[in-house]
Image (cartoon, rainbow, N blue to C red):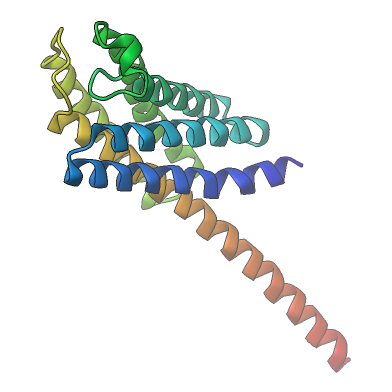
Length: 200
C-alpha cells in the first residue's frame, strides 16, 4: 500500500509543477491574474495531495509535512490574492490576507527543495540544494520590497514560483526515472533467469 502511495505521489507532483509553470506563463502573456490564480490553486491542491501521499510512504516526515504546508500556502495565496484573487469580491479591501499564505508557501517549498537532497543522488541532489537556496534568496529579495498595498504580480515573486516549480518538476522526474530504471532492472533479471532456466 505504501509503495502505491509513493508511485502516485510522483506524477501528481510532476503535474503540479508543470501546471504552475504553464499557468504563470499563460497568465503573464495574456495579462490575466485570474488565470495565474487558478493555476496556483490547482498547484497547491496537487502539492498538498502529493505531500499527503508522501507522508504515508516516506520515512522523511519533515519533507512530507513541508510539502503539505507549502501546498496549503499556495491554496491560500490563490484564494486571497489582492490581484484578481478568486475571492477578490470578499477580500478586495483586505489584500494583506494574501501575504501570510504566500510567505508560508515560499518558505516551506524552498526548505523542502533543500531537504529533498536526501531523497536523490549526485549530481541531481546538488541541483535540488541550489534551486532551494535560489528560491529562498529570491524570496528574501521579494519580501524586502514588502508593500502594505499589494500592487499586482512582481518579477521577484514570479521567479520564486518558477524556481520552486522547476525543482518540483525535476525532483518528481528524477524519482519517476529511478522507478522505471528499477522496474527495467528487475525485468532484465527475471528475463535472464528464464533464459538460464530454458538452457539448462
